[in-house]
Length: 67
Image 1 (tube, one colour):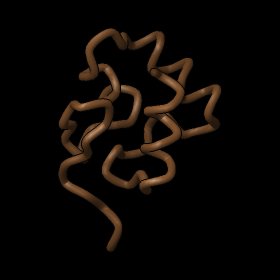
Image 2 (cartoon, rainbow, N blue to C red; image 1 turned 90 degrees about the vertical axis):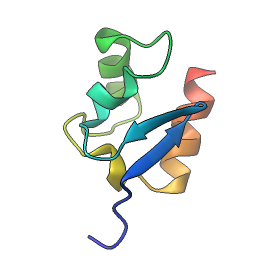
Image 3 (tube, rainbow, N blue to C red; image 1 turned 135 degrees about the vertical axis):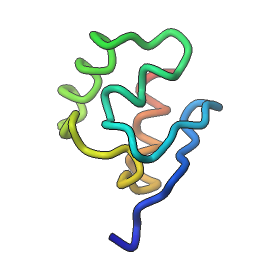
Image 4 (tube, helix red, strand yellow; image 1 turned 135 degrees about the horizontal axis):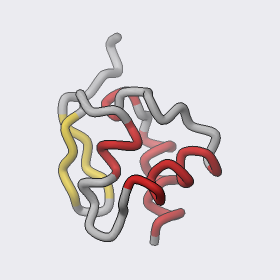
């Protein structure tokens, strides 16, 4: 995996790339497990995917959706 990042910055929050997507999103203030799970479902993202494998477009789309 050449595109894996150890640290991802989403909505001004640093998240370890080793976390699963739905768990990592809960590190952002105001996002709980239910909201993170719903976000993954609406955006058609695998919630078990490692957050470090997200590309820049996906990170931008997540930020636009939660803001």
